[in-house]
Image 1: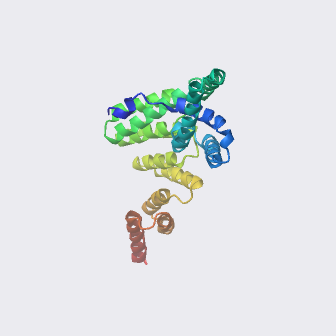
Image 2: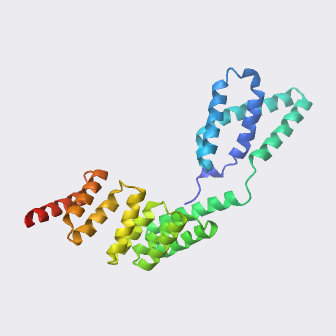
Image 3: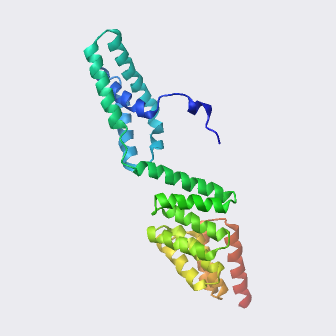
Length: 270
């Protein structure tokens, strides 16, 4: 898709808004009582964002408040020029330049690589959902080239191979995803489903049990375990798993039908 026209306009980016806002905060000190709430909000929001989020898009909520101070900073610079206070103007411009430099420091190539790997991963998901599996593979591999420890791209590759019927390829990628993050239960769940489709019920059972070790209330793992037990004729164990699946996902028609089938079969035997 083409970029929106407005994104092509020569507007100020956050790289300039941020240092101007800091300058505006500095110049607004005499009115600190009037703008105290803005100071508190920006400070607390910045601390929370830096502490818990790594992506710059999360700063968007604070941008309007930064713009208020950025406008104050720009106004103070203009006032110094208008009033011919050149020494103060020079100090303001030097301070702005320093703040601009500090606000735009990037940690080597890490930020660039992270953005690119996320881009390739997202593009791969879109292509995979649209059925363009070969192109999706390329995107996931590009993401993994930039970030070899991206378990989500490994998981997505496994899902893609499963879709095209390449079970061995799916198994390989699910296992690699587990090596990176053994506590991400979806990899175990999907691997169990692949094993089940291959007729490897014992291996599938192990993976579903691992899912429940990580997330005991997972409905899908309980349901799939129930099916395995039902096929073995272990009605009581199947019933227990189906009931647990239904507690995790009340109203699930597939689980309810399986549960009723076990109950009717068991009552028929009696």
